[in-house]
Image: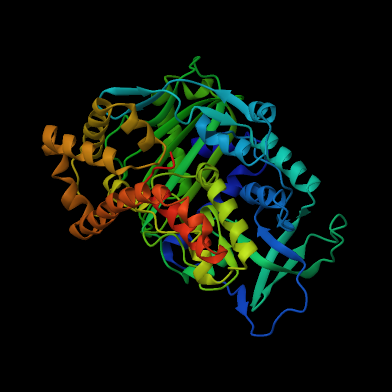
Length: 526
């Protein structure tokens, strides 16, 4: 019996079965054998009546936008295939990012404080054979998802929203004046007064079902991701007392054609630790179960404790695909992807909570304006998921932290490069280092870091070129120059905000989206 089988068999629920089920999907993903669903159709016939302004599929992150839109007066229905409840594992985020819940009147200050389960400082960045770097106030807040989602759920319902739990999305037909959404409930949904199969109609359908949404899979038509982040980990007790966190740490050279990275955070139930790595979706890449076995093999060395002393509370695993051609452009009118469904998250991060929170105000205001102006065509809604060069430039970072299936790299090439980059950022100060660790890349900080690293450690930079490939490098240079252009446009846009308030509402909608694209795309929303 492997360590994975032994430990998972001791936990409640069929965790091993869930792991192997996830591995079957991962294998199908690698082999590109997942069927392309046909869940969205189009009709030229108008709908007679429309029941809702907005229907959101996917409640875990959809409740954020649903509650924000409902409190603005729109009639919102939220579809969740299970019971809308947060997981027991905390979501880590930086405190300043939580301010959006106050700005949108979704939480009171007291409720926000109650949502914070843990807080720690400082966080460490370290790479094998390199120095330790310490920084405060980055991903140092652990939010309690159970409390947060319960509170938002109550406010959503109190404002008049409709929550359809134990109800799954089956399909949608896009009409000229709305979308008919087919639903399947687990038995008769008494609270919603719906039969087992039914359809409801909306002006706008929002997809918050994540990476593996059937709508997304149909839109992508079997496209394979260029990058994948594999994550395995646990929350456990029995570690030595430690109130610091690890933001990104490695202590081993390249193994199994992967560079292993680690995160660790103090948690309410003990300590959370993750192993994660970046790779492609080649069919010969290892399974999630293999990586979990690697995690258990290396965890004692990482945390300085015997495996037999660790009392595992929860085990976590998953894979997060990312696509170079992002965000996703929906081919239909009246359908808007948000969160992981949109593909607009950074390829070097995993989990959608931080990205959703960061963009929540922008999405709320933009969707509100789109509904008010009835700008719900594919072209209009695409403005809510714009190209962002500050995200696009991180593709080369992801490639520089991954190893091709047949590549032969020096054992510590990735560690040496990252050490050199973080040494440069540390010299340049927290104003450069902190945004980068929050997935916010800015032109000035990136340019200074690249210049300083090239001058002080050219031997670590040159090997990156054959590693990532000339095509990737040239593509990156386009995004880098665009990042500089967006930075200038963002400054210019701030000067024209007041005079353009006199424009009609439709031109205002588009101009507001351009301003947001320049601001977020330059990383100046931080």
